[in-house]
Length: 333
Image 1 (tube, helix red, strand yellow):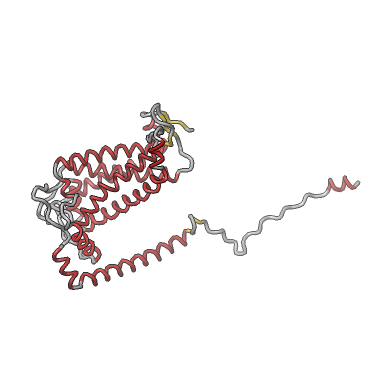
Image 2 (cartoon, rainbow, N blue to C red):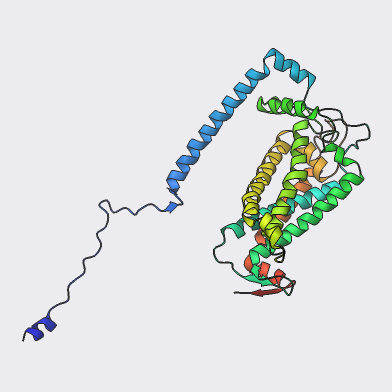
């Protein structure tokens, strides 16, 4: 009888979870903050950046107003005279090389971030000569090879045509002139310049650092981290551990991002039409006022952005897989 009563007893009802006191849903977080908190943090950060920038400008103007500093800036206006044999202007090959470099750098940064943050690759690529790698890494390494070829072409033509004198310092005066140019930028009384003839010394040092220091570091560290690194050289592997390459590769990428950002800002803020004509249309003059209202360079720049945007959108697994099959085998595992 006890068993029959137990079997006929009604099952216990599990209480439903209580809603919150106010009936509100918990805010969704994007990382450590909610959407509203990110917006507030952005507003506060923008005001803080504006205040810091204002303080920097005021301090720089105060320094520039000191008698000794004024004399220094008069002696070193921000640039020095190049050798008489230095070429003037931007040849057509340099404009094309500049476009290819920008195009490849944007895609290299995008593919690098995909590799860095991928949890499970959408597909894998392999060939008879190469081990299996994620399709994102295949894209990144393929773009790296194209970038290196473009860089070698640039270096050969740079030294063959004498244009190396425009980005390689030929006088110790480059350093005091760079300090003067930096101070002029900080005061917002920017140095008058004509890139068709000569860069200011700060620009020259920046271009030299990018071409002859940052680019080789990116190439060497990338090679060490790639599947192309030889496996049968244990002594070399021990002397150059992969941890060192990883510690240098990502900061170098951040340098390129910062360089591109500052470069684009200065191009547009110091005479967009004239500068874009130099860089994309290979048009310019010793007269800095010439080509200041010519829209050809801007048109070419806009077309280049469309090409880059199309390539950016094309970096999707299905499209990448169809391209990667031309060079090897693509598999899901």
